[in-house]
Image 1 (cartoon, rainbow, N blue to C red):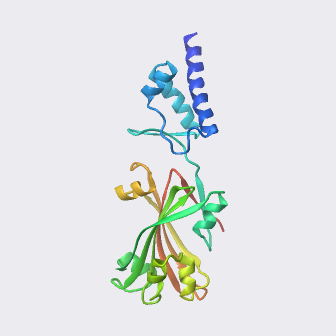
Image 2 (image 1 turned 60 degrees about the horizontal axis):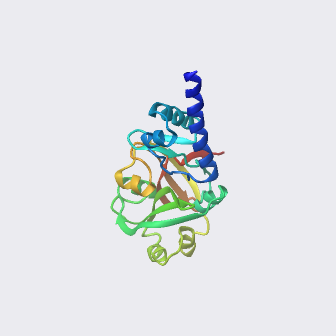
Length: 238
C-alpha cells in the first residue's frame, strides 16, 4: 500500500511540474526549487521528490546538474551546416527572433590558427569581431570572426558603423560567400564563455572552425564559433 502511495506521489509531483512547464509558468532554463523546498511544498520526503525529478529528466523536460540544482530543459536548436549558413536565417527557421551583441571589435595580429585559416602570415593584421548570438533573447552562440585587414582595409570602420558582416563585406565588394570548410570539436567552456552563454562550467561547448570563401574561391573569413550543448546541436546536410 505504501509503495503504491509512493508511486502516486512522485507521479503527482512530476505531473504538477510538467503542467507548469507546459503553461509557461516555468520558462526554459528556469531553475526549479530545491529538493528540500519541493519536499515541503508537496509534503513528502526528498526521496520522493528526487524520483519525480529523475522521471522528468528521463522525459527530457528537466536537466539535473550536480551541485547546481534542476532546471527546465531548453529547446534544442538544430544548427544545420550548409554552404550558406547565416545566423539570422538559422534562428528564424526555428520561429525565434534573432539578435546579437558585439563583445569585441578591433584589429589584432593573427595567431597561428587564424593565420592558417585566412592564408596570411602569422602576426599579420586581421579584423576580429566577437559577437554573442541570441534567439528570443537567450544566448545560443559566441562567434569570433576574422578578416584579413590587407584585403578589407575599410571593413573595420564599416563594422564599427553598425553594418552587419554580410553588409560590410558587400561594401568591400564581396556580394556572396559560402562555407568551404567546417571542423567540429568539443571542450569545456572557460569561465568567461560560460558566463556569456549562460551555461554551466560542467557542460561542454560545441566548437566549429569555419572557412568562408567568395565566388572565386578566395578566403574571406575564418570563424571560430562556440555553441552551448544544452541548447544547440550541429547537423550536417549534403
